[in-house]
Length: 155
Image 1 (cartoon, one colour):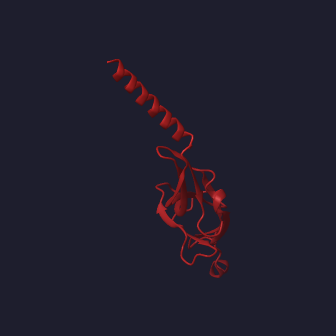
Image 2: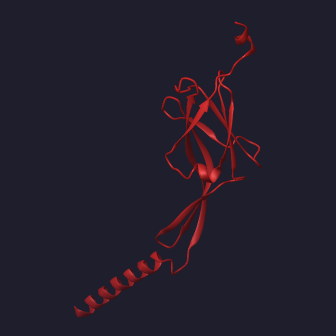
Image 3: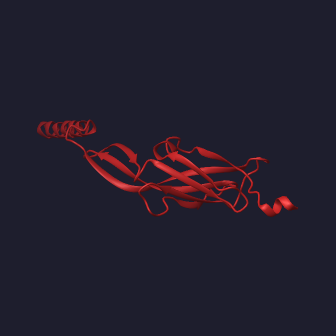
Protein backbone atom coordinates (compact mmCIF):
# COMPACT_ATOMS: atom_id res chain seq x y z
CA UNK A 1 0.00 0.00 0.00
CA UNK A 2 2.85 2.35 0.88
CA UNK A 3 4.52 1.50 -2.45
CA UNK A 4 1.36 2.49 -4.40
CA UNK A 5 1.21 5.86 -2.62
CA UNK A 6 4.90 6.53 -3.39
CA UNK A 7 4.46 5.57 -7.07
CA UNK A 8 1.27 7.68 -7.37
CA UNK A 9 2.98 10.63 -5.68
CA UNK A 10 6.04 10.32 -7.92
CA UNK A 11 3.87 10.16 -11.07
CA UNK A 12 1.89 13.18 -9.90
CA UNK A 13 5.11 15.11 -9.17
CA UNK A 14 6.58 14.19 -12.58
CA UNK A 15 3.38 15.20 -14.33
CA UNK A 16 3.36 18.58 -12.58
CA UNK A 17 7.07 18.99 -13.37
CA UNK A 18 6.48 18.13 -17.06
CA UNK A 19 3.56 20.56 -17.41
CA UNK A 20 5.45 23.34 -15.62
CA UNK A 21 8.54 22.83 -17.77
CA UNK A 22 6.40 22.91 -20.91
CA UNK A 23 4.62 26.05 -19.72
CA UNK A 24 7.99 27.80 -19.62
CA UNK A 25 8.89 26.25 -23.01
CA UNK A 26 11.93 24.39 -21.68
CA UNK A 27 11.43 21.66 -24.29
CA UNK A 28 11.38 24.17 -27.15
CA UNK A 29 8.66 25.64 -29.34
CA UNK A 30 7.39 25.28 -32.87
CA UNK A 31 5.83 27.89 -35.12
CA UNK A 32 2.69 27.23 -37.10
CA UNK A 33 1.28 29.67 -39.64
CA UNK A 34 -2.19 29.92 -41.08
CA UNK A 35 -4.14 32.44 -43.11
CA UNK A 36 -6.95 34.18 -41.22
CA UNK A 37 -9.40 36.89 -42.22
CA UNK A 38 -9.31 39.95 -39.98
CA UNK A 39 -12.21 42.39 -40.03
CA UNK A 40 -12.03 46.18 -40.30
CA UNK A 41 -15.07 48.48 -40.22
CA UNK A 42 -15.51 51.93 -41.77
CA UNK A 43 -18.27 54.40 -40.89
CA UNK A 44 -19.04 56.54 -43.94
CA UNK A 45 -20.33 60.04 -43.19
CA UNK A 46 -21.61 62.77 -45.51
CA UNK A 47 -19.43 65.86 -45.04
CA UNK A 48 -22.35 68.33 -45.23
CA UNK A 49 -25.17 66.63 -43.34
CA UNK A 50 -23.15 64.26 -41.13
CA UNK A 51 -25.63 61.54 -42.07
CA UNK A 52 -24.50 57.99 -42.81
CA UNK A 53 -23.67 57.10 -46.40
CA UNK A 54 -25.20 53.81 -47.49
CA UNK A 55 -24.71 51.56 -50.54
CA UNK A 56 -20.97 52.19 -50.79
CA UNK A 57 -18.49 49.63 -52.05
CA UNK A 58 -14.88 49.10 -51.02
CA UNK A 59 -11.84 47.86 -52.94
CA UNK A 60 -8.41 47.35 -51.44
CA UNK A 61 -5.06 47.42 -53.19
CA UNK A 62 -1.60 46.46 -52.03
CA UNK A 63 1.74 46.77 -53.80
CA UNK A 64 2.90 43.44 -55.19
CA UNK A 65 -0.56 41.86 -55.35
CA UNK A 66 -2.60 41.75 -58.54
CA UNK A 67 -6.05 40.92 -57.20
CA UNK A 68 -8.33 42.68 -54.78
CA UNK A 69 -6.87 42.40 -51.28
CA UNK A 70 -10.07 42.56 -49.22
CA UNK A 71 -13.54 41.06 -49.17
CA UNK A 72 -16.52 43.27 -48.41
CA UNK A 73 -19.29 41.92 -46.21
CA UNK A 74 -22.51 43.24 -44.74
CA UNK A 75 -21.81 44.77 -41.33
CA UNK A 76 -25.47 44.88 -40.32
CA UNK A 77 -25.11 48.53 -39.31
CA UNK A 78 -26.40 51.56 -41.20
CA UNK A 79 -23.57 53.53 -42.80
CA UNK A 80 -20.90 51.03 -41.74
CA UNK A 81 -19.01 48.99 -44.31
CA UNK A 82 -17.07 45.96 -43.16
CA UNK A 83 -14.16 44.32 -44.96
CA UNK A 84 -12.13 41.22 -44.25
CA UNK A 85 -8.45 41.18 -45.12
CA UNK A 86 -6.38 37.98 -45.27
CA UNK A 87 -3.36 38.00 -42.96
CA UNK A 88 -0.92 35.36 -41.79
CA UNK A 89 -1.22 34.35 -38.14
CA UNK A 90 1.96 32.85 -36.69
CA UNK A 91 1.36 30.76 -33.57
CA UNK A 92 4.22 29.72 -31.30
CA UNK A 93 3.40 26.44 -29.53
CA UNK A 94 5.03 24.18 -27.00
CA UNK A 95 3.86 20.61 -26.32
CA UNK A 96 0.71 21.53 -24.38
CA UNK A 97 0.43 25.34 -24.56
CA UNK A 98 0.06 28.09 -27.12
CA UNK A 99 2.85 30.44 -26.09
CA UNK A 100 2.07 33.45 -28.31
CA UNK A 101 0.66 34.52 -31.63
CA UNK A 102 1.31 37.42 -33.96
CA UNK A 103 0.07 38.58 -37.34
CA UNK A 104 2.05 39.47 -40.41
CA UNK A 105 0.84 41.21 -43.50
CA UNK A 106 1.03 39.42 -46.81
CA UNK A 107 2.75 41.70 -49.31
CA UNK A 108 3.45 45.37 -48.65
CA UNK A 109 2.42 47.04 -45.39
CA UNK A 110 0.80 49.90 -47.35
CA UNK A 111 -2.90 49.21 -47.80
CA UNK A 112 -4.89 51.46 -50.13
CA UNK A 113 -8.63 51.43 -49.51
CA UNK A 114 -10.92 52.89 -52.19
CA UNK A 115 -14.44 53.75 -51.09
CA UNK A 116 -16.79 54.00 -54.06
CA UNK A 117 -20.28 55.46 -54.32
CA UNK A 118 -22.17 56.78 -57.35
CA UNK A 119 -23.16 60.07 -55.68
CA UNK A 120 -19.91 60.76 -53.83
CA UNK A 121 -16.29 61.40 -54.75
CA UNK A 122 -14.39 58.12 -54.58
CA UNK A 123 -12.05 58.32 -51.60
CA UNK A 124 -8.70 56.53 -51.64
CA UNK A 125 -7.16 56.27 -48.19
CA UNK A 126 -3.72 54.87 -47.44
CA UNK A 127 -3.32 52.85 -44.24
CA UNK A 128 -0.43 51.00 -42.70
CA UNK A 129 -1.73 47.43 -42.65
CA UNK A 130 -0.15 46.70 -39.27
CA UNK A 131 -1.60 49.84 -37.64
CA UNK A 132 -5.14 49.44 -38.99
CA UNK A 133 -5.49 46.21 -37.01
CA UNK A 134 -3.93 47.65 -33.86
CA UNK A 135 -7.23 49.01 -32.53
CA UNK A 136 -9.38 45.90 -32.65
CA UNK A 137 -13.06 46.72 -32.73
CA UNK A 138 -12.46 50.35 -33.72
CA UNK A 139 -14.68 51.75 -36.46
CA UNK A 140 -12.68 54.02 -38.77
CA UNK A 141 -14.64 57.13 -39.79
CA UNK A 142 -14.43 58.38 -43.37
CA UNK A 143 -16.00 61.68 -44.45
CA UNK A 144 -17.27 61.65 -48.02
CA UNK A 145 -17.91 64.65 -50.30
CA UNK A 146 -20.82 64.83 -52.72
CA UNK A 147 -19.98 64.36 -56.40
CA UNK A 148 -20.83 67.50 -58.43
CA UNK A 149 -21.70 66.76 -62.04
CA UNK A 150 -21.49 69.39 -64.77
CA UNK A 151 -25.20 69.08 -65.52
CA UNK A 152 -26.01 69.93 -61.88
CA UNK A 153 -24.40 73.38 -62.21
CA UNK A 154 -26.58 74.36 -65.20
CA UNK A 155 -29.87 73.80 -63.39
